[in-house]
Amino acid sequence: MDNKQYSTRELFRRFAPYFKKYRFTLWMDLFCAALTTVCELVLPLIMRYITNEGLRDLASLSVKTILSLGVLYFGLRIVDCIASYYMSDMGHVMGAKIETDMRRDAYNHLQKLSNTYYNNTKVGQIMGRITNDLFDVTEFAHHCPEEFFIAGIKTVISFIILANINLPLTLMIFLCVPLMCGVCMILNFRMRSAFRKQRNQIGELNARIEDSLLGHKVVKAFTNEEVENVKFEKDNGTFLDIKKLTYRYMAAFNTTVKLFDGLMYLVVLVAGGIFMVNGRIAAGDLVAYMLYVSTLIATIRRIIEFAEQFQRGMTGIERFLQIVDADIEIFDEPDAIELKDPKGEISFEKVSFEYPDDHNKVFTNLNEYSGNGSFEGWMRKIFINCALEKIRRSKVFPLTFPTEETEQEISFPNALEEISAQEMLDLIHRLPPGYQTIFNLFAIEGFSHKEIGAMLRITEGTSRSQYARARYTLQQMIKNLY
Image (cartoon, rainbow, N blue to C red; front, top):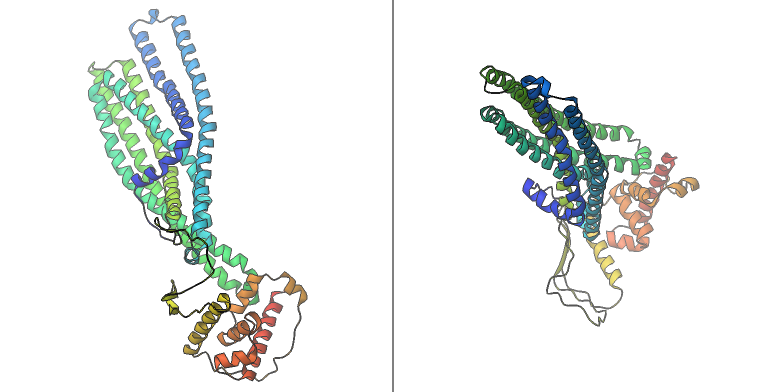
């Protein structure tokens, strides 16, 4: 699988079309997000009014005025609750639907990929990409536009209100924001890299567990439990190291945010106090100022807390795109001509075949099929002859054989009923090369010992002896399973 890396812009561009079907829900979610900000932005103004009026002329501040302000704030809180409910319900449903659409697209694309893709990609990696990796997309699809929209509204409105209260103090506060954003972006990119490695290692761990559990009978047959444990511990330890690195970046990220939080409060405390002493800001304005700064910092902190979820969502989208961008090797060209009235004739012109992993050529310049007889049988013969030629070149034959009796039969009816075809193939693949070759040719391909002897340039008796020994070895393996 191609682990291509995408820029943030590219990820957003490829992900955005999934909102198209749910744009009404998205706009309603953003509208509700705007309503929830009203309550937080109005409260400092109410406190500023009450404080200033009380300090200037306490008698002018009536109970009726305070109750009216209380009713207004309570009404805003009701609106805030209704809007928050919609965001939590329909917003998450929208995210779940987008996750479902993405999983459907990934699965449909997987159906179009060739065997080469599956030969080179572990099933555990594929499963992780279309299940666990997309779980975080639900939260990302809901919270990403919502959180940034709320942060944008609060930042702009807070700046306008604070600038009207005291522009120099406001500029001093907002000068900290770009610096904090720059440092946080650097740490964010490092976090994404760590999350990417973490997701990839989860896939490797899933693949390792899957292979081990599916072949547990074979593992037990060869008493390889300790070997499997060592392999698992290696992958598990690698995953732990990656998580440690992720948490180190998260700790640096959160510490940086707290540092800038304290710096902004320090500016308000010192500069605001000096301005109040010099009569450049009223006490009520300073209270409102502190409340708005608290709201602004809470918003920034909310974005910061969302950063981990944001990076998880981005890596999930990235790993999803690595599936849907995998090349489809079997497809029709744009100018392909539809085959009409086929006669069933097959012709070959310089056809070659090799395995992509090791570039081991099976045949080259194939153009000898005459059309007589079974094409399947002809192709099967070519594959077998090419495989046997490779065996001969690898000097597997001649082999020496034990002198003990090997013709004995051992019956394990219960074992044969319970063992799967895949487990039997795994056992056959563990046979020595000579035994495996003879067993495949006789028991699976159906050749006689006389034909096998001619193909391998060995005697018929040698073929029989090897087959008997292979059969006996398999029986011992099956016996060890139960």
